[in-house]
Length: 400
Image 1 (cartoon, one colour):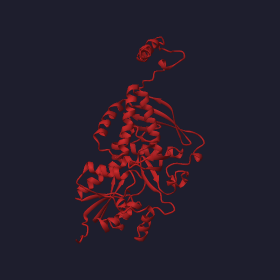
Image 2: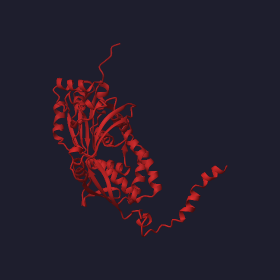
Image 3: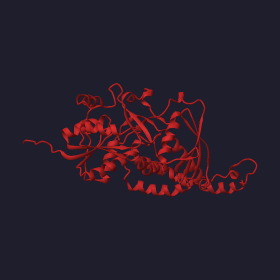
Image 4: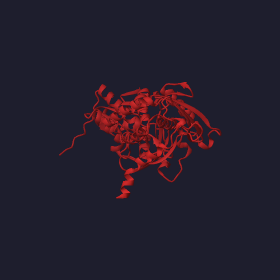
């Protein structure tokens, strides 16, 4: 039996970042999987000019190269809901994972508009992002084929760089410093290279958004963050839209060495990885938001919400954003954010974020009840009866 040549897709929409994996993917797709490749670059606040990336895709061989500005959508529909849920995985804010469902959504939209047969991404078979892209695409457009060149190709980072060199494809890394970087408004993730040695301290060149805490200002920087219905609306009393507030806070907190995280994490596929993260604004806002919640919510609400926050973070990390449970948690969170209005005072000092003050018209903190000094209005004699009833079941057990 003679096996014919594998039929190629007519059009494939590739999530294009301009990095190693997606740059070589254009050439590989044209050689093996697609008649035409449409490169889609998405502006999520990377802080870089995307026109050169757009041009680069065309030079490599893409038939079309599109750029979509999705910063506002990312902030309003992804970052703020994640903030409401205090979304943290391990010790770091979810930035890369949070952007993946939005990218998948836009890939699907462009694929439908351009009548493409498939979408493609640059993820390997060892990482989390392949799961996030594939599961999101399956949820939104199960009819679309999913192609992952790096996963099918099974090439190492060194071989990918060699392939790029052979075909005159410019890539932003070298063999001696093969960092893989993902960046958006909410944070920056770095892996590969020397970082794969879990014993070695990350070199300074691995960081870009944050100053070395040792070189940060010798005096604390104090800031205030104002929230309305859970959304940060002002920095140091000055009203700012979401984009400007996050960008400005990234600068201030980053200058104070805030947001560096070095973590061993448990990937969805079952292996452990060593990642370095930088999330200056996210670290500050998440800590400030959670502190304000503790001021305005009841004890029962806070305890219940902690379990929801953990579940929400897991859904994001696992790539299950388009899940009815996530939508339901969003509804709950949006309702209780009505009380999360107030101002948090924060001290930034050599990598540390310390909440030093908070106030809100919805505050449940009453100084006259909390004080041990003059003006105390709490009737301490009422505690005896409360404690007796509170421990009655345990007392009953002992008497059996």
